[in-house]
Image (cartoon, rainbow, N blue to C red):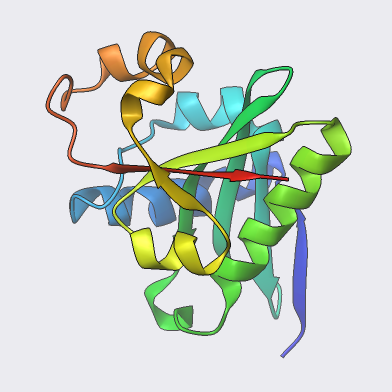
Length: 152
């Protein structure tokens, strides 16, 4: 199997939309519209196996020293193969290249992110996230996701 990790392209939007929204239907992440994806396509990396996109993840920059990993999803047929770890590392490398010092995520997958070096924090420690995105979320103010952060 040939595995490639690369920046997402416009032609990947349909697959990213399916990956993210499959998890959203299970209540594991927030849904994304295709318009959201077009607007944020430059934030995404994808993993391709044998010319098929099977995983995605995005790095959203908040401030000069803070970014978020979001929309991390792997096709169910390709889970437990280390692809989530691969894409997370690629996103952290991208953050480092940009000069970002801290990367956070809001997730139900605490153990996964802890294995990647993230630590749990209180969501209140991320006022930038709350005022930029969270207040628009249907779960606000009763969000049950966990906030995790890593310094790079």
